[in-house]
Amino acid sequence: MAQTTRTAHPYDDTDVIDARAPRVNQAFVGLVCLLAFLLQAPVLVAIVALQLAVGLIFGRRYCLPCVFYFEVLQPRLGEGPLEDARPPRFANIVGCVFTAAATLALLAGVETLGWALALLVAALALLAASTGFCVGCEIYTWFARRRGIPLRDPSSAPPAGGTTA
Image 1 (cartoon, rainbow, N blue to C red):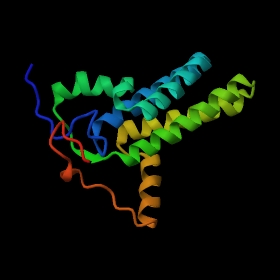
Image 2: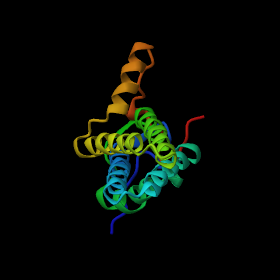
Image 3: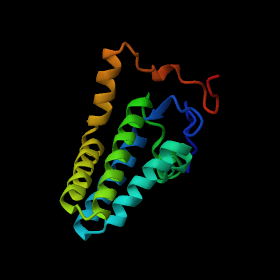
Image 4: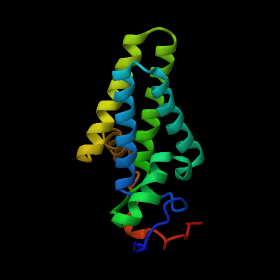
């Protein structure tokens, strides 16, 4: 297996991300939430919420779907196009809040609300994974433009392993 050259380190260069990594994470989130509903297994929704929270708090190297992408898929496929990491991070925050709320609703016995939230996350995550259209990313981008916050130019990513000061 040939080692691919990376222009951005997957765990250290957090300003940008390989555009395919969030799609793998979205597929994981969507499929597990859908499976949770089909199996009526609230614990799976809680696992998604926990995994999203861990990745957001501690970084990509602790996000299991991200590690799978960066360590297994990316070396075989090569690095995809880089994108600003803030929109997918915002989408993960929204997904974390919604799956945590779904978990709390399911634990409180408000199953209709809990499953509705979990299925909403599943639908939006699977939409993003399959088409590349991420509603959370679009919301972030819309608000950033309104506030005059420029999106990062992925071509300005530091060399692999180099972080910005």
